[in-house]
Image 1: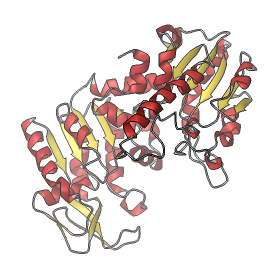
Image 2 (image 1 turned 45 degrees about the vertical axis):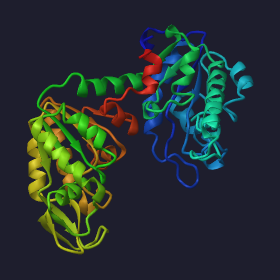
Image 3 (image 1 turned 45 degrees about the horizontal axis):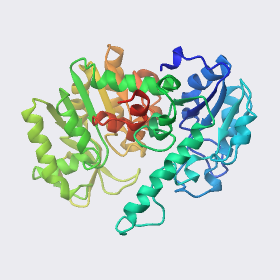
Image 4 (image 1 turned 90 degrees about the horizontal axis):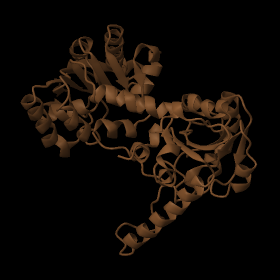
Length: 416
């Protein structure tokens, strides 16, 4: 079912949102982007004359009630954003009374789903090596189904609008969908936008296609890199990964970050890029520092010849030019991961060069998708969010979608 075609009038809708927002030490919301992102879906339910039940997780309480992770802290923010007074159910699994009292046009927020281990469906208090683990896992899966069934019983229809959790088969993101027929479960507006954005990048590629993969570790990105090698024209690998590739090719990297057990993987990526005719762009120079701090002494040196005691913390001037050249002519662009330690103001140059080139290409008609926490943080830090085509709200979910994996939260709705 498509949310636009569905009329929520007189119905209770349970919506899985991602309200896992950052809080300060006093429990105040410091960034309400995720709350605002969910508004189109939530307002559609209310404006149709439906009753709205919102459910979300916050943090990682691991099946225990933790006051500092209570969603009661954000009720005020959600009320202000929605323009209606949001009621609160202090126990998500025993909210029957609050749900029964809910009238059309009213909204209710359930307490943190992850206060119950059944939400994630992982056995608690037992080690994977324990001979009874498989039995405990089986029992927890049954408990997860019952938990999902309970949540489903609150409503006439289910809306999945939490892309950030779509890669997990949790009770509220996938299992719950089994208790609704195809005409009463749907993706929310935010989810639809995310799925369309990924399809635009991977399923509707306008060439040249340039992907930029940054971050510190090859190991966390290898599945994505291998999938992209069969799709992209240009692949920029930057950030801490630079030094694993430099060392793999016999370079000297000082005390730069490096995964010594992934040197063969790096060489294999270089080989596969050549075989696939992909232009692989690696850092040739870097900004090296004598300490991991913003005010360290710095020097520009070759990425494969860094003096002892120094470490590469950002892309150098020649590398930035090479990155920009591979980005500016592109018609499809994907960016995940910074080019340096962008948290330090003195080492933002490489990431800013990428952002500037993406903005220029986007202005010239490219489709640009930015995803993954650090890339989004970069774009926001540079005040350039309005200069790119789409910013994804999902980190892990986006990466798994790019890797070619089916997301349980999408499959549960679409029946894939």
